[in-house]
Amino acid sequence: MPEPHADPGPGVPEIAFGPADEPWRNSFGGLSLMSGPPDVTPPSSDPRRSYASIPEIPYGQFQLPASGLTEEQYAAAENHFRSWLEQQCRVSVGFQVSGDLDYQQRLGPYLGLALNNVGDPYQSGAYTHNSKILERAVLDYFASLWNARWPHRRDDPESYWGYSLTMGASEGNLYGLWNAREYLSGQLMLHSGQDSWSSGGGRYGPADDPAGPRSNSYHPVIFYSQDTHYSLTKATRLLGVDTFQDVGRRWFPDENPLAPGTPWPAEVPSLGGADGDGTIDIDCLAVLVEFFASRGFPILVNLNYGSTFKGAYDDVEVASRTVHEICAKHGLDERPVYHDHRGRDGRAAEDQDGSGGFDLRTGYWVHVDGALGAGYAPYLEMARRAGLVAAAPPVFDFRLPTVHSITASGHKWMGAPWPCGIFMTRTGFQMVPPREVEYTGSSDTTLAGSRNGFSPLLMWDYLARHSYDDQARWAAECDRMAAYAESSLRALETALGLDLWVARSPFSLTVRFRRPVPWIVQKYSLSYETTHVRGQRRPYAHLFTMRHVTRDLVDALVRDLRRVGAFAVG
Image (cartoon, rainbow, N blue to C red; front, side, top):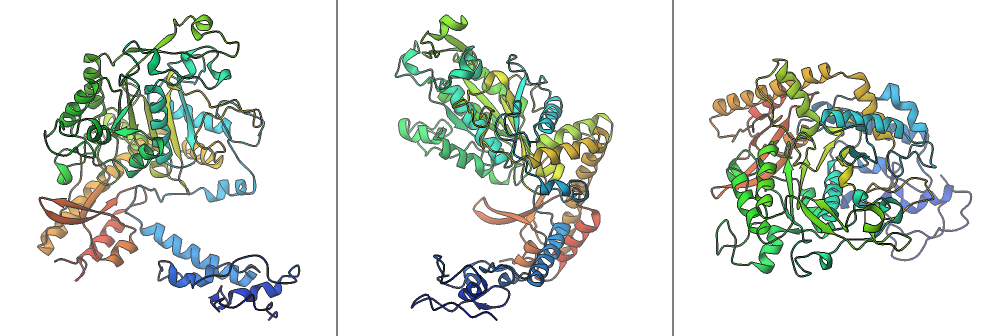
């Protein structure tokens, strides 16, 4: 064993570290370049005690000493981790993640290559080792699937524009709300003038609005339901977008139109409340939108298409039409947005593009969070038309002129080893890049800038190998599996004589039920959530019948749920 360096000082704890369980500082002794202790900090306490433990995985085996791991230590740790992960993936049923992955043999060689899709997907740029040619093919596929006009053309405002997300739908939600904020608050859009792309900057503003600078015309207000994914709350805070509760509390504290004199709710109620199916209450949405639209506020609405916990499908067609009709009543269906933007030559925009100093925009924006549903429901609709299932969720896509943007996750229905996804809008709604980027040779139109080039490769590979027929059959089978899981849990409920609160929302691939004890939650990676129904606390779990979930796996879960002590009741 190499001799350790001199003691780095008093107070440094002798903490067992790494696979060899030796003091942390001992690993410096094997480094030939080190003539003394390096300028790094020692552990202040034992990390093995500080972090949540996983019984099957001893954390010390994976710790990284300064000398690295020996070949034997690396092999033991990697084998241990892979075996554990394979087991967890085999029996995972709690999240909207497909475990049916088979990319390793075909795509493994790409892990030795650098792929970065920096900047706009339609500009190849100076960073040539990218997968943008595949990304464009994937985006065209989804544009067709979602009934957008394609291919993308920069000179056609009705064609689609989109990009492959480095994160999942949470990034798509963030980008969609950012795009909506810029559009509704009067910022420059790509198609506001011919010089927009190259000039950058510029804005429209309330000072140019005939209603006057004190109007609400450029102050968007967002609405989303109580079953909306937490990423919407995070995005609104990050972007500084006011919710209807924010504005209501600030300016109209006693005027909650849903219940005058009571506090403003944080979200639009869902039908049936906490015990309902998770779809947005369109009547409540209409009352709230009417209140703010009548006061001139632009309206930003998020609708869910396969909500996170209940798998609920908002009726996008009815909800967005309702929003449109209310906004039309108050002049927010098509409004002139006046601008003071000037091109690089100093001429006013109307002198360059003949716009008359304004462009026409809707005073509302409808974003669809289709994390799972936007990737799954189109195939279920195909299955319905083929007679494989009886029904499918309502229309959500660009067939509806009232829909402005859609996002979907790639790692959910399709399945990928890491989060990824798609964001899409119309080219006419596209924001102007903050600046032209000569360094990369590609305009920075996306959120991330540098983007994961492996995700388009994975999605292209999946879509290249699986036809519409394949996916329609799988969608029908997943729908049947969800029905089987629901019936199995209801039979268990009867056998146990215990109310398991079993429920499945229409068209959903998830079934929710009473949360079992922790070892079952961990074994099957069950997602969980606590609600309050009529004053009663209800700890729920749920399962998702993604493509890898079989009858045998559902049966195994039900057998474990049948065991004595599977539910901590009381």
